[in-house]
Length: 248
Figure 1: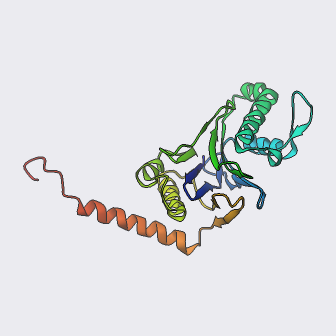
Figure 2 (figure 1 turned 45 degrees about the vertical axis):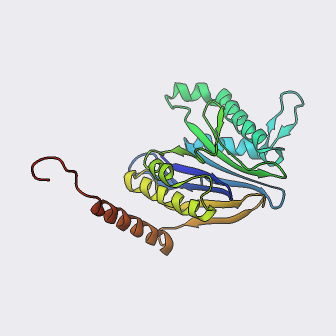
Figure 3 (figure 1 turned 90 degrees about the vertical axis):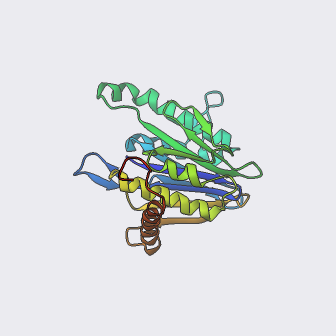
């Protein structure tokens, strides 16, 4: 399992992904699931993946090496997409291409075609955008009313984002809240774990402001986890007990 979150606020974009991949309790590995396609000053795209690792890696390889255009025959790469919307379309085409070539074999092996992506970034003078692309190749876009998208094991971290993130949230507050969301997921699901990869992109910069990997020994993330647990304990103690029953 995995957990990836993308947060698009007024100041820019935050992308966060864990790295744990497991095929059973005794087969746990670490693989990068957050990839950058960047030409500083011109374009930056961050692509996070969830689902079957072999499928997501194959899709990323197709996007890197190129997908033939049905009309011109030319190879189209993610690095060459003229807009973020066209980039999302290309990710969808890569997924469908892979489904056509591998779908039957996977079905015969009783392996589900389980893969999804978050794609966020900005190209030249175009708008900064964030998309979630499904295993059928279709996609949805992040909006101002709910300025985040998630893939993978998202249910444990979603309440944090729902309560704390708005489009006006400061960019680095969004990063902090995203990390709290990741911590909440890690505490409730052993299929999500460190290291954590993150990218912060300021709007109209067309380059990454921060590219960082959080390891198990990092002091800030350990402190964040402890402070969040303490804050939750203090909050529930400060709330009056329910006035129900004779012992209330």
